[in-house]
Length: 316
Image 1 (cartoon, one colour):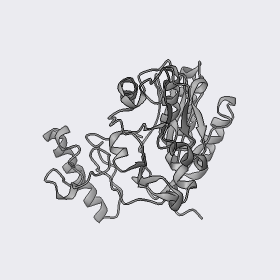
Image 2 (cartoon, one colour; image 1 turned 90 degrees about the vertical axis):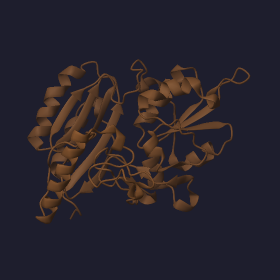
Image 3 (tube, one colour; image 1 turned 30 degrees about the vertical axis):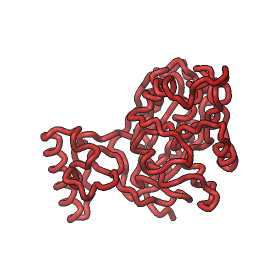
Image 4 (cartoon, helix red, strand yellow; image 1 turned 135 degrees about the vertical axis):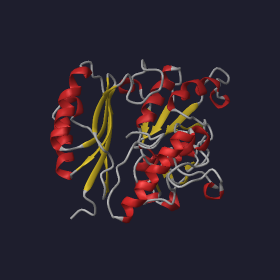
């Protein structure tokens, strides 16, 4: 018997899809038929998704996708929840499944060398290797690897410009440095290492399965990871063994609370935190305040409140 009734799966695959437009409607129809909800992104470069629903329905969607030879080896990650994470099912056509600003880069043919979690420590302990965290700044703030450089990205699309200016990546004596890159689950690393190779870097490596696979595989006593890893679901962050961490989420900006949140006059439960207070209007705060009130009423009645979309809500 499963501990929770809703199964959430996340998956992606870089693969050439020249007929991407014709895939949208049949895939959406099948998901809706199964009662599955979430978001699937399709682009000529591949697929990226997080969906949730009853276990049988989710297994049916995965089986449906894998009947296509292009997705026959599709890998996925699972988590369980008591409440449905998403309110509707959407399939969107995009230029890129992860936005880098350089859609001409093809991870399916140009990605760097995969490094398994058990070999990662040796690689990143090499002083000649430049280790780069490709995640957004608020993710890095929760945790990262020893020696990792934090580009302080607000969006992944800022990475190419940062690479062009980074002192650690400059050519020295006619030679570019070795580069190792990592991200949460692997998708951003495949795109970023392909971008690095397109820029002329020859020795480029990335962590296979991302931070999550490392935390699942490597014991705390042998780990070079420090802190927690932000995840885009109700757990907020995880530790070694993928156990839920201590970090909690601001329900307005959908980002983890920064340090000092609860002592700040910019914090209001369900309305704002120091990170997002200055980025929302008074009207957005009023909307969030009303939604928080409705949530509290629903909690008192032991009912789930779906409510209106939050002011800065990041869709799945």
